[in-house]
Length: 297
Image (cartoon, rainbow, N blue to C red; front, side, top):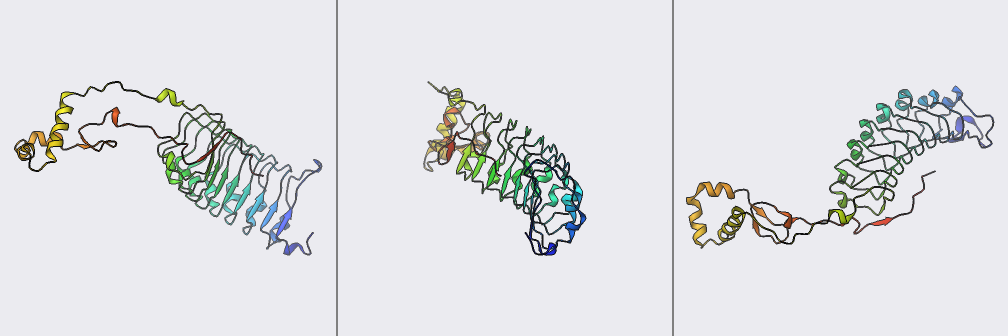
């Protein structure tokens, strides 16, 4: 109930009985200058009503349970103050590049749609905190998504994603990640550096640890590597004959110029071998569960 249409801050135009589904909105909505929250769930909208593109002060919009197949670029351009957008349970396949117009968006939920891809412009939603794209048809995510540096919760469960793009470390505030029910075989490099508190990854095709374990019974180094390590070790002693004689052999100095340290024993080496490789346990320090996270409402 509201005393005056012009003073409404929140309007519910929702269908709960299944009858008299609304397919259009009156132009008079543009007269609600204080309207910041609008609920239009469970109706029969085939697209986001164009009149909404003129309610520039709108902050929260709920359109779940309709028949929307696309987002109008003009409507996106008129909703620049939107903070929350709920499009769950629709039939959206694509998002227009104009999605970047929702510059203040913090929470976007689009579960149970038919999304096949995200446009690169999605990365311009710099204020995005929570993104839920579970139960869609996504087979990949754009690297530009990692430009959403404020993202703390990312849900992309029950899609067809085969790989997460490199650079995920840029999501330095990500606390919750749900990639359950996809086709992932491994996580990207630097994944273990995320500040994750919750990780849901059941129902994928991850390579088992036993398949990547490598055991070396005996390492046989080439004579060049053995000689180089000996010379590099002796060169550390400024009083050794090797250290004093090395400047007399510029060709040898050039060969040894690219030497490095073994990350385990810290000894001088010319080339890296399997003895210097070890595997990280990404589960350490984070919460992992096999339960399913329900989609946001």
